[in-house]
Amino acid sequence: MSDPVGNLWYCYTPLASWIADTPEESLLSATSPKVSPVTTATSKEFGNLFRHPSCTATLTLTAICTACAMHDPSDYLKFLKVIWKLGLNGVIYPFFEGWPMSDPFDFFTLEVLHHFHQLFWDHDANWCILTVGAAEINFHFSLLQTTVSHRLFEDGISNLKQVTGRDHRTIQWYMVSVIASAVPRRFLIAIHSLVEFQYLTQAPSFTDNSLVKVSNALQEFHDHKNTIVHASTRKDNSWRIPKLELLQSIVPSIHLSGAVSQWSADVTKHNRPNTSLRLTAHVQEIKVPACSGNNQNYYSQIAHYLDRSEKCFHFDIATYLASFPSNQQDNNELSDQDEDHHPELESQDHSLTDQMVPT
Image 1 (tube, rainbow, N blue to C red):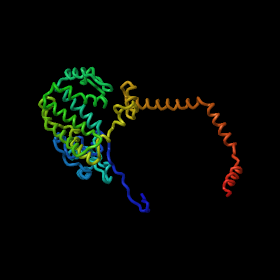
Image 2: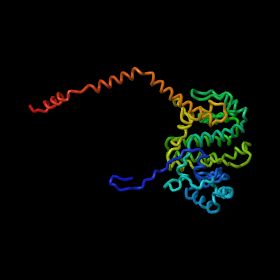
Image 3: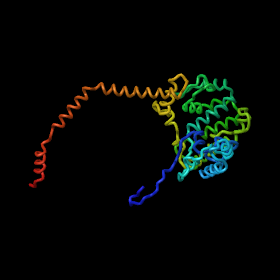
Image 4: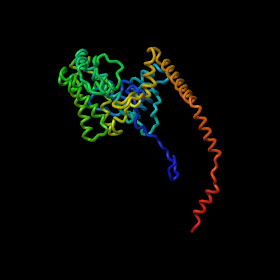
């Protein structure tokens, strides 16, 4: 691109953030699902209470070159054994190769829907259900007196399916108070600290003191997480949860890219809470067509649904335009009258000239 002086400069678009869930991050970073996409931690180290060194683009590209040097990628079976040992997923040409100032640990920012709310529903809520008991926790939720715009769980939460992000938030609001009298104290502290960490990280802005509170909340969870194992909610003492390891990168990401709440997938997934109802692309193009079928052959039925919807839309436009022939004729007559009308230019010029003659 040229500057105002005329000099030509190479300009590169910076990649500030790539909003994706955990499997997509592993795929795009060219790393194995058993390796963190942003750090050097492996699955056995996901539960550590400290952040491992960042997995830079240079490290990933070097590992890919090493794997290609050991075996030809076309020999997939032998190449597969190599890439798993090096923590790769088989991608040999990642998109960030040659992109200046673009590293996965920089642009893979955590987002609220997948890394907070779904983490809570997949793990925190499951721990609570196993500890309290499905029947007991369902009974506690059925007794809740909900306020306006909050969902009521009359049948409990243990048998919920196809839970939306709004349901995740609502259950998260109630969970600590629901289990308060039915779990050990240290177990309650672990759940409370993890929920508090997720709430603190959704602030619109941060200071040094607020970031210290975020780090302390996560540290408090790690200090009490063994109580979850002692409560017989887990079979062993392993914490191979990728999203749990990604929480260690929250504070560095805030320092680098700003508040986490700006990198949210809510806009393209579903409705935001406390806003007017509106169908977004994900709901309108995927969920609604899927629910209109018979739960068989989703892809073909969604394609037929969208094709018919588009044809109906075009038909409605055509019939709507065809229903106003008189207005179109009137507009044509007005345009013809405008073309036949010519202003008296000479009189206008004389008037202007008269005004310019000095007195």
